[in-house]
Length: 500
Ligand SMILES: [Zn+2]
Image (cartoon, rainbow, N blue to C red; front, side, top):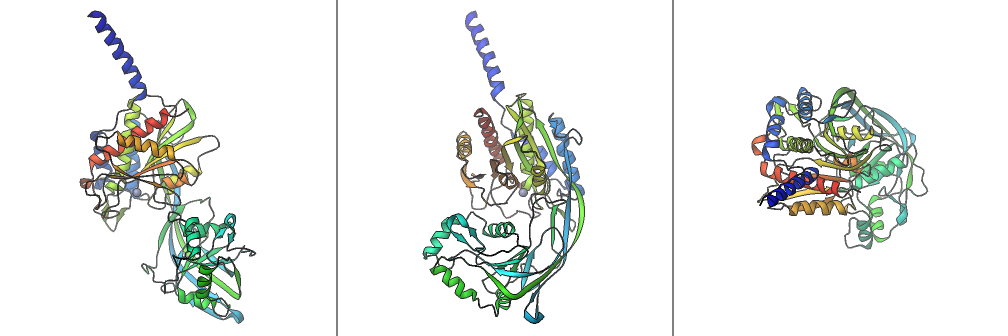
């Protein structure tokens, strides 16, 4: 009897030692419901990155990280990674076609063109090259830039790809395979033009005349104070404006499109005796912002796993508070709950775990971009970047609220296996929508995916309250968050257990 008792005590002891080394409890509702309510409360004023509410949210998140005894990321600035972003207002845009003998056609920004500017004012006059569909797939033997130097020139291209007008054609079939739906075609064309040193890209809208979404004069956009990547502006041109541009060039866009369906042939042409003159005038203002970062140090501090979620939302616009409960108080409260449980477990993980709350996601993933641009990937390896963005609601068609979307990089089969395994351990597993992040820029995962870092991004469904004042705390589904966090936590544990 005694011996048996003793044995069972020893067993229990061994068990608890083993258990404490390999287990981190899954977040319960009380681990995240309070932080979610505070972040989504009117007190936080919608957490606009450049507004007071953003500062308050960052202070609050840092205080929670301190409470959970995370190690501040920076020796100098503690839990904060401070940096600056610029807010640009487009004041004026112009676009002129200059023909032989200086004949000028002035296009109207309301009816003829729309521009996606870059983070600086520009005034340029340059020759123009027609480069078919703007694709340079040299490995596949197709190059719209063949025999043409477009350095310092403006490139004009068609929408779509060869054969896109006729889905029964062999050309269509070939290019559909080369350029599947999940690739962002416009981004590919832009990158190609940048790589070829063009100074602007024009895309012809072949579906009749261009009608702007809203002819608002003052368009506002944001950038990092010092963007490290080069970019060029994109002009979208109406068909009638494009016709003016091509008049007298001997090129018929219609027959070019028809011919390209019949025969795969790449070609580019300098539009002789034609130049474009464009201006983009911006007014820019600088704002200080910050990411909030806390760590659990691992055995090997040269390797890191990131668990991140953006804390910023739309802020207060015309006295209306956009609370952003799902987008993304849900993800931040989930991140904090995981931080709490990992910290309380006292486990020393095999590598660092960085709990991150990004700012200015809504302004173009600026917080995560700044972070990765200033992270020394030579010295420090990021093994995995987990992202949670909107994890508390369900799409209207998801009647049982049991669909969960998880994105990973192409070829991340082991990560897909891990999340599928974790999901199967739930009493009521989700229907998983597993997808690949190729070319998408939907949330902060994209900043890491672009650097080739494995990612895992969680999203619980698109709903009608997205980016509206109706995205409030009373509508979040706490059960869903709890189950999402179960998958994140189980996957994290399994990922770590599989580490060499
Ligand atoms: Zn979001």
